[in-house]
Length: 81
Image (cartoon, rainbow, N blue to C red; front, side, top):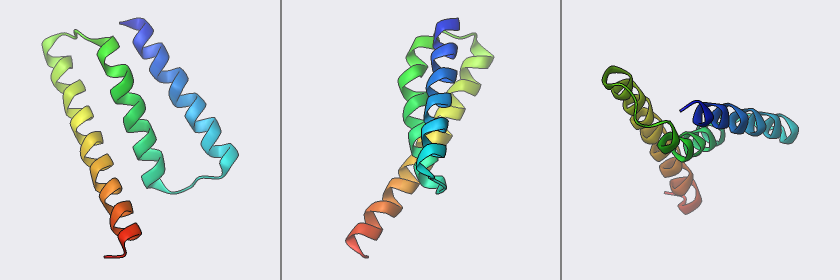
């Protein structure tokens, strides 16, 4: 379980450094990338104790909803609707 959290922190730090280097300041790109990192690392930190598992799943669902919202906004802006 510890390796998964270390991977999450390392990937998040690398993504943050890359965003700073590129000058990315829009929240939709940042939330989308961190959501993908979270969902990629989440299977490696399972199984969790029951109360912590519910919190972990709740965070994942909120991030997934935010990712879907920002992706929909990007698609609508591309389609110009």
